[in-house]
Length: 261
Image (cartoon, rainbow, N blue to C red; front, top):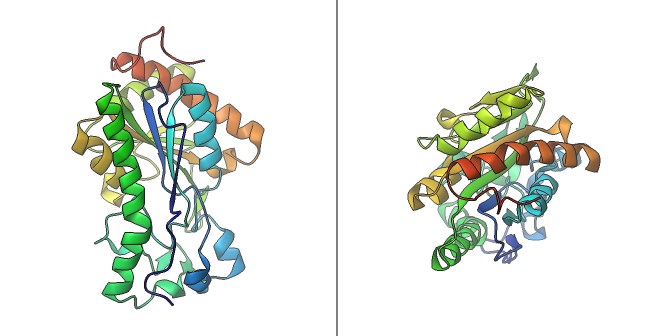
């Protein structure tokens, strides 16, 4: 396995220069494993599974982008190569096991191999986000960091009740406003910091790109059985925008007149 494979296309930025306040991040948008990693030794089933990516998350992000006139920064490489929502020192950044799925290609990585993946996958993603934040600051554009994920309905054999999770770290403002708006709808099993929370190490992007820059931030988790068709994705996307849009207005990041249809 090469220590410095060419994976320079590790990130995509869509709708840069958008007028809306939301800067959407989708760290787990793709299950692509570049050839240099030899499939990480995964079975075909494992390579297609939720362990390799967040099914539906990229399409959901794109739907929200259109509704909110947002910018999207999305990873284009499987999180099993490198999980861009984890810092380099975290074992889960390059996991040897994900739930019940073993990842042979991540076993026994040398420091040089780990560093190469950081340089090839993590740093380009972070730099793309930083570039968008800097551009927005330069034009005095209000910004909120919104990360979009999906999760499996059954985890270690246990069904999950949560349909939509609204997650936060120490900055709760945007999550609070979204949960308040969502409570008025009452259609979904909507929960705070479920199925994961800060104690699970899932708020790295919120801390790095949101809190460190003084930007309101929130992480959205959607159970992936609700994202199986374009119609499903559009319906969930509309529900999320109906929570996020008034939350952005409430925090003064947008006005009613600039909230997007």
